[in-house]
Length: 141
Image 1 (spheres, rainbow, N blue to C red):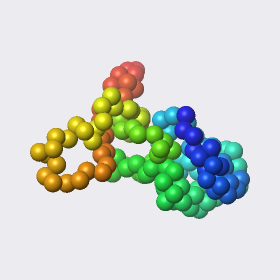
Image 2 (cartoon, rainbow, N blue to C red; image 1 turned 135 degrees about the vertical axis):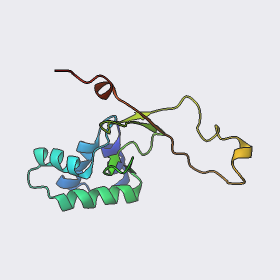
Image 3 (cartoon, rainbow, N blue to C red; image 1 turned 180 degrees about the vertical axis):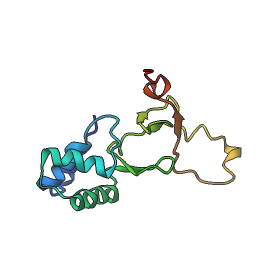
Image 4 (cartoon, helix red, strand yellow; image 1 turned 90 degrees about the horizontal axis):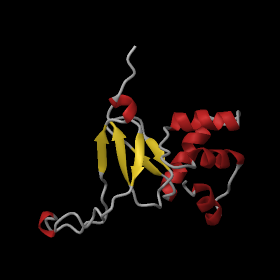
């Protein structure tokens, strides 16, 4: 589970009803919703929440470094609440499902010194692509 709601409370971020609902929607493991999916789930909990509130709050959370904006293969931006837990992503090339994965080794150390070309590497983004079980084994009629 992500600890987004607790992180926001610890930060003293003003949790209006709208912000709280958005944080609750984003809480969980392997959560990578689009803004529209966040809005749809938030409306189920707080019917009067607007799209503008969702988009503005997502933008604020990204700017604060509390969620990560994830874009893969030109698909819609998705929002990952696990910003403070090092991980990579596994993406289904069929349906676009995203799962968080934790590597057994530090990906920064995996780049040999002679392949850094003098760069001081500060960040690594590794994304794995494949097909999820549902896309690999479609149900036949």
